[in-house]
Length: 240
Image (cartoon, rainbow, N blue to C red; front, side, top):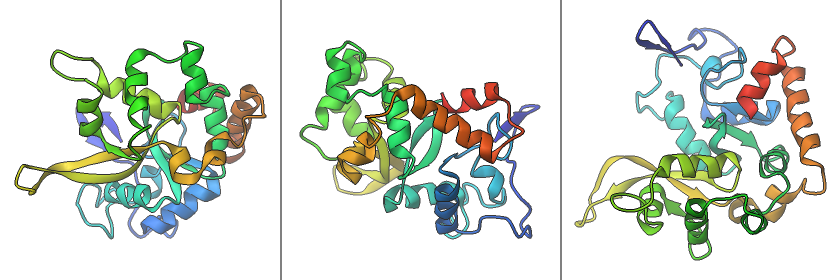
């Protein structure tokens, strides 16, 4: 998705293109094939779900055809990881590649060790501490319980995004809020969990024995393998 002359333009495949991804399960299959995939178009040509789907049904709410809705189904399925993983923007990582990303992004640190060494700020700790008592929390619940908002901590969106970039949190569902009468309203809100609580400790720590620089190199080399025409500068901007 790009802003061209003040208008947001989707860059997808024609409806009748035989290479077009047609279902959310096909999208999962493609993610598992390539290993990891941003949701929207970026600096690397062809490296997004957007560019492999049709632009006709985005945000239509049609669960059969809408890739924006598919991301909810995919997050809920647990077949791949979903979150803001690519230059602070949304995307998917296969369970095979999740430990590689976790080792690279966490620089080999578990959350507690990163905090002990002063690598995480207090606002991030307030959020992560909530997951000691809660397996999952919606975004608005985290904001309230961690003390963000009027008169409290600032930049909730930035902190929750950074925790996803570090793979300490992933999105696993989207749910509507409920009012005091139990009636649903508004737009679906992301639900967060620690990847270890979804797929087990090894899903995040499986590459901790590897130098994080090696993990980064593996990701870059995979990108070069799939997109040989992409420059290293563009690749690093997307996966940083």
